[in-house]
Image (cartoon, rainbow, N blue to C red):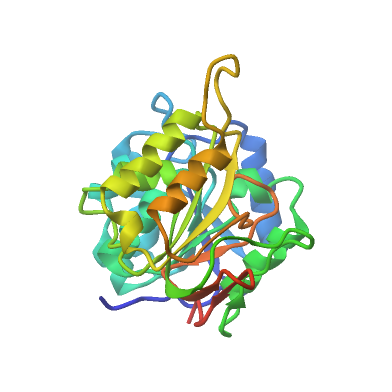
Length: 313
């Protein structure tokens, strides 16, 4: 597969804003995010259907896909940022113009529900995308300085990415010892499992798989990790990187349950490759930006994750 990298982002470039999943709950947050991007010297364009509503979706599937495809096809647009996640991105995957993504690679940024679209763009177009801050949740209000610096560095620099740093005082923790090399894939566990067995799910052989999630009950977390094992994903990996599993707690503490730590301990028995946890990514303010599809090296013994190539051209 030919691997595609978008040109780096420059001041004056046009950023398209889309909602592939759920709608923004407060339009003033979108406006604040737009002002922030424009204060940095970028131009912005809102997807025509960004204010559409269809139940819990930001418009119909055709409307949401039309916005994304229009930006893929527009040579003036150099990056596409998701305003938020939520629910509904997998519904768009058969409607995406992957040929347009191959002809004119764009920077695509998001996480959470947007994971489905990012993995489909990797599988169908070989496009490197970015698991990173979204407009409403991360850029519109208080911006975490660590996350902000890492984000813009990856999108604007053509240098080799190098080590993905952890916040000060929060090193990676070894799950299994050893060193591994592979392409960074992931990230949201729920969306990865929802795509398994479809033509939009990537080949995880020899990948460094990053996992995170939010708001999942512990038995569901256990079920999804078991699905990765039963589908043969875990045994084919090069290495495993566990991020934040935010608000994944027992729904009833009066009844017996397995803790997060116990569930992950079982999973590591199924996945004996080099592994780390406490990676600074997920539904948290202080997070790195991950260039999904880039080649990286994991040193679980030293708690180090290094991207060995450029993320943009």
